[in-house]
Image (cartoon, rainbow, N blue to C red; front, side, top):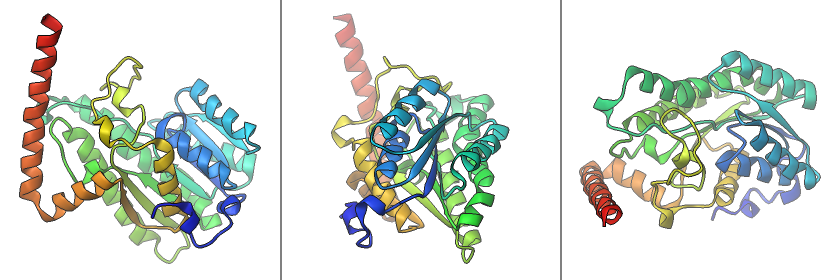
Amino acid sequence: MWDLQSAGGADMGQLFKDKVFWITGGGSGIGAALARHAAQHGAHVAVSGRRPERLKEVVDAIEQEGGRALALVCDVREHAELDRCVEAIIEHFGTLDVAVANAGFAISGKVTEQSREDWQRQFDTNVFGAAMTIKAAMPALRKSQGRAVLVGSVASIFTYPAGGLYCASKAALRAMGQALSIELHGTGVSCTTLHPGFVASEIGQVDNLGRFDAGRKDPRPMTLMWTSDKAAKVMLRAIFKRRRELVFTLHGVLATWIARHLPSLAFRIAISSTATSKANRLKEGRSTRS
């Protein structure tokens, strides 16, 4: 169903031949996998992010397979850096065809316990950073009649306890993508908003200040986790077909269907997950003390 082989019968090695991708948050997880797979399908790829060593790993992997790639150190909260990224991409590759606003992280905690600074930090990256990424890329995308891509989340539709800030930021991103699709209609530029469920990445190991901690336990259910490579294939197919919006992973599709059509059930599931989480924390505490 999700295999790129079904994407219009195109030669798989030429699906994005000589197209130029820019992927923010491209040093790990979904962003890195998307960069590698885009390159395998003929694209030239620029990856940006805050950790130069991780960006270099992605670029090295692409170049070892004969692809062309560029690493750009950039914090999406610094909007002037986004403009410089676009300038560097145009200078290096000559054009920009696909801009993927993928950079993001999650602040955990109850809505009433988060500060204004927490809200600002969450939206600075997930919403304002994405908006300014697309704004910076748009002049080049208009010239190439390219594709704008927003990486949202199932959390934009199915809200969960202690995730109010993150869910709100992804809901804003979803609304942004819907508005962009309308505004861009007829221009030759498309907007695709992608909503993954649980996908293996480092998001669960990033704290509320946006700092990566390799020792931090990812609280998401491992039994439902998709690999980033599997997710990247689905995302590339949607980008290629210029889909306006796509929810993917089976559990993600099910969760969003319940949230849309059976909101009372979604509420009960969320309440149940809160109770289960509390019980697990108590159990872990007893195990630690014993």
